[in-house]
Image (cartoon, rainbow, N blue to C red):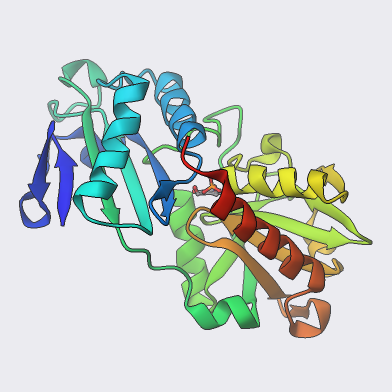
Length: 287
Ligand code: PLP
């Protein structure tokens, strides 16, 4: 496996970074998770726009032009002879001294990793997920925008730890007002009376690229779309619930905090939307 690091491709075993990298010392950096389907990199532009915007927001200069970065991602997939892959792009502040001031850091470090994907286990796509809501809160949008996909993923990790403690594969985090924000690494949708609900970004959700694709599908398919804040109660009484993300794609949720959704099976709308999503990834093509 070849990994792009410090301007060249190196073997996985040799892909090491300095302990003085501020990505390691302080979580100072940004990242993206991108999918390739049958050799086509799905919505690469959108992912890289989010990467560059995240970097701009934290005043991190990515030492590659946008087009060069696109090529780098494609090259990493090709170099590893992958058709279906998950690509991780990481840009860290780079090597500095022990102080947190980014002024001590030299050039940002760019890492690109492409590998085969470990999704939720296959059977969970047929049975649907049981999830719980947890105490960890999404960071406030006015402090650090959830739109910034930064290397500071501690609250998401705490969500995952709480999910592990509850023995479920995923969990739901609220914002400080108690509105549902998102999962540890995925967005949430509800279906209620044929309308599709998802929290708006300002509630504290990353505006996922899969979420965007689902909203496009909903529009094309004539669903009523409601991007509005909702609470756990609304989740409990929804007709259907599903999660979306680059890694997870679309996956049904059939139990939330012990409340059974849709008789405990993935719903028809979720299945239909999943089918449309599959069509979309097959036809969107590389940009
Ligand atoms: N929410 C969080 C916190 C994430 O890390 C991700 C993954 O990128 C998502 C949602 C889903 O976003 P996307 O569909 O762009 O992968």
